[in-house]
Image 1 (cartoon, one colour):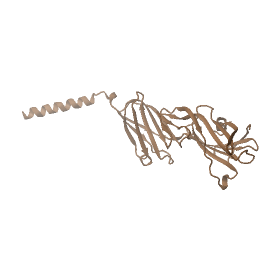
Image 2 (cartoon, helix red, strand yellow; image 1 turned 90 degrees about the vertical axis):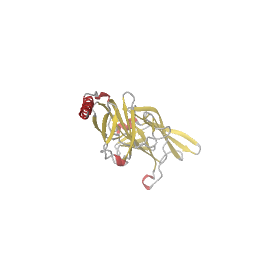
Image 3 (cartoon, helix red, strand yellow; image 1 turned 60 degrees about the vertical axis):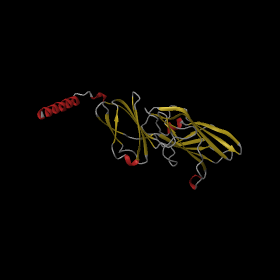
Image 4 (cartoon, one colour; image 1 turned 45 degrees about the horizontal axis):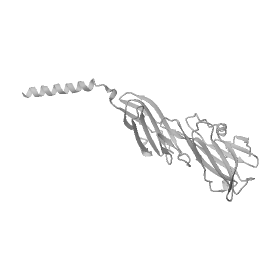
Length: 270
């Protein structure tokens, strides 16, 4: 009887092992390992979204101290989109991240991967890229009508979907004037952040403010100036634009680096 019990147990064990060996692994999840070790130092936090083509979604948050450790997640096998959004502050989640009405974009870094994960063990590297444009705008005070000015920046591009597509909506931001310093004492200076642009509709309106009166001085299409500064909307990473508006000469000067490297001057209509 003793040997019969042992024999039965061995048969059951072998049957179980055979079942594991011959099991169809397609329905089993894949262990996906993501490498975040190359994330730039100025990215402090990442919101991660992993989405299967059938709608299955995994979401998580990684902090700076997590980037050095390989990230592992069990995911459904098949077509997977991996979206990593860095430095999210005020942008809102809606199957991606978009700029709320009246706000500017965050200093957003992103990575978008689209892969077929079919093995039990899968590996990928997350490479984050700067995906916003800082608009550094200053207006020479000389010959400027009114007591002050107001800037309004508008665009139909408001963020990014999980798949990396540009999200469309209404972007309208009125930046606050930067406090005057010895370095910018002759200018009204402003900063606004925008996301990657879908078309050439990006516009800057400059208005004069005098008491209770506000009147438009000029409206400037900015897409052309971005191109002339070398900012390519199809590039992996986006740069910044530095723009000086001089109404006394009816000119705009632009640069992709800083105020001291103005590489283009063009006339504008006022």
